[in-house]
Length: 409
Image (cartoon, rainbow, N blue to C red; front, side, top):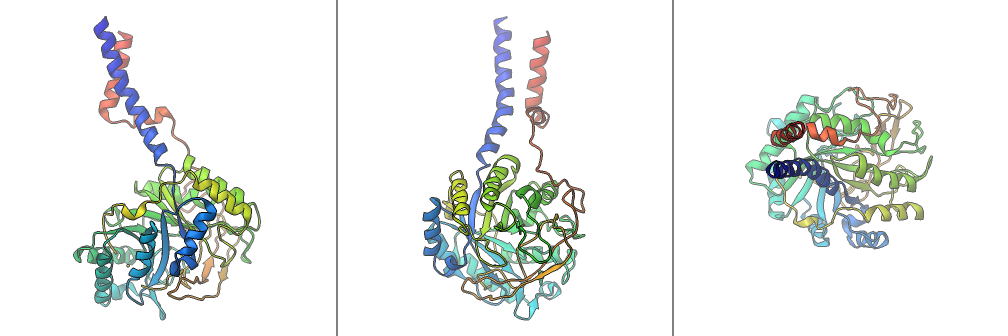
C-alpha cells in the first residue's frame, strides 16, 4: 500500500511538472521586448537616452533604415550597441530609380554589392537584426508584389541569405516581415521563404484612427493584428516580432490603446516576442510622447518589458544600405479592417541621417471578421490546462494514464 502511494506521488509529480512548466515558461516569455525607431536617435543616440529617461526604461533594440544605395552603416550600428541596444536594420531593396528587379539579383547583377555589404556586417561582429524587403505584400512597396512575383520574393530572400552564409556572416538574425493583411490576395504561405532562411517572422501594422482621407477608422490592437497573427502562427512556429507599429491620437484614446497593446501581447499573443514602436510625427503623430497621457501609458507598459541587455544576445545567421529612415515607398500599414478602398499618398524627405518619408498606402474594404485566408479577427483563444494535457510528450501522457489506472485499481 505504501509502495503504491509512493508510486502515485512520483507519477503525479511527473504529470504536474509537465503541465505547469509549459505554463510558467510561457508566462516568462510574455513580457515583450520594447524597441524603438526614433529618427533623431539614428544620428544622435542621446535623443533615445532622453526618451528612455522620460519613460523610466530601456529599449531592447533601436532601428534604422537603409536602401540599396551604399555601404552598411556600421557607425549607426555601433552607436546603438554602445548604448546597450540591439541594432535593428530595415534593408529596403530600392534605389533612387525605384525598386530592385529581383531577376537582376538572381542573375548576379548585385553580387558584388551584397557581398560587400555582408562583409561589412561581418566586420561589425556583434549581433544585429535585419528585416529584408519588408511589407513585400503591399502594393506601395517598390520591391513588392507589383514589381516581383511571390515566387521571386521567396527566391530573392533565399538568394541573399545564402550569399551572406557563403561569406561566413553569422551575426545576423533575419526577420521576414510582411504587412498585416489588408485585403490583398497573397497569402503569407505564398511569400514565405521557409523556416531555414528565417530567424523571426514579423508584422507591420498601425492604428490609423480617423486621420486619413481614405477613410481610416479607429482599431484596437486585436483588430489590427489578430487576423495576420493567426495566419502566421499556422504557417510557422517561429517567434514573431512586430517590426513597426504605432497608434494615432485622433478617433479614440491613444493612451488606452497603448495600455491594451501591452496587455494583449502579454495575455493573448504568446508567439509575439517584442515590438518596435515607430515614433515619428509623419502621416500623423505616431510618437510615444505625442501627449502626456500617451507617454505615461507607455512608461507603465515598459515596467513589465523584457531586459534591454540585447547587444550581447546570440544570433543564428547573417545580412544588409542607406537611408536610416523609412523609405518613400514604404508607409505604415493599414489593417484588414479598414473601411474604405482608396490610396493615401504622402510626401517624402528620405536621407541617410534618420529622417522619415511618406509613401503610398492602400486601405482595404474587407471587414473585421476575417482575412482572405479565413482567419478570425478576434484575439487568439487562450489555451486551457486540458488542451496542454493532450499536447504533452508521450512520457507525460503515459504517466497520466498510469496514474489514472492506479487510482481505479
